[in-house]
Image (spheres, rainbow, N blue to C red):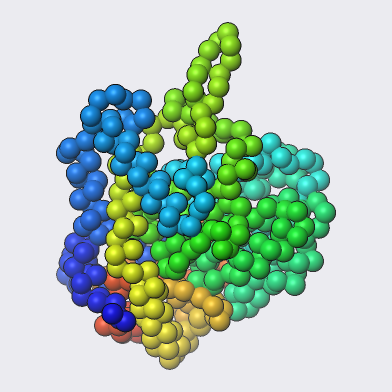
Length: 408
Ligand code: PMP
């Protein structure tokens, strides 16, 4: 098989049958949240109907089944990311919490006043604000890699920034605002040559391409379930075993201890449990496993090729729209079409096109610093998933043209 069978893919997503304002839904807000296949919905349902129980501590059958399914997903995630050990996979609430974990645990244990963290200008706020908070608390300096007019990171500026005091580099694998794919392997190599670590925000990469943390040679890698055909409320932090071993816990509570005593002190669990305090999102973790199974069954390479085909079609069509300017024209990009239109506010376009059944996103996409550097406070963003079709792309551009005619 060489082409994605998109009709089959669509039949896995019940929500795609619904209408919005009397029109068939055209869902192009996948970078915010992707839709959920029946296999994932059924997994959530099955958990609550058959084996809802708290994990790890129980000696009864339901607790055993829930624990096996939860830990089974950890192994699926390990295999999916190409990590060396399941001990390197920590479940979090999402990408945001994964980054905050590294900032609060690794950051507070390892950073000294005057140390430097490098972030890029194209980061999502979730890969900026935790570092700003840490920089303020620990008197650490933040340096920011600039972005050119195509939406490509300035690699020469990055290499100039790396120095003796650089401790950590934080960069997204794929930009949610522009779709730019960043050269993470080379950036990791450069960071390591300077004795620094690299944390990669993979929220927009995992749904769209194969990811192998060992091939990328990164130290931390984060992603969210809800952008990868999984449920909300669950995400993953990959961290190198030796790093996680040495890091202190950042939240205390049940599940993360092996013994608690006022007299003899408290002993923490082994990794990864040391970083999973409290009852986790058990159903959602298990359903994340179902989402990865769904992606594997569908074929990530077929999905990527299909999305690339849609991206090219949409780019060509949008570029032909009078007064429309694409924001983000990196040679290596996936799935995201960000644009502004002369004489039309992005918000107006978003509201009016919703009336025609098309869901896109407008605003700053949690990337205000980069948009500001481009002289923008908002764009319209259409973002694609494997279930989108060429017909939807055409209908979207047609709807956009109607909307532009209305607002001009
Ligand atoms: N990083 C990127 C690149 C994102 O696109 C997002 C979500 N828009 C996040 C981080 C934050 O993810 P979450 O809200 O799931 O924690």
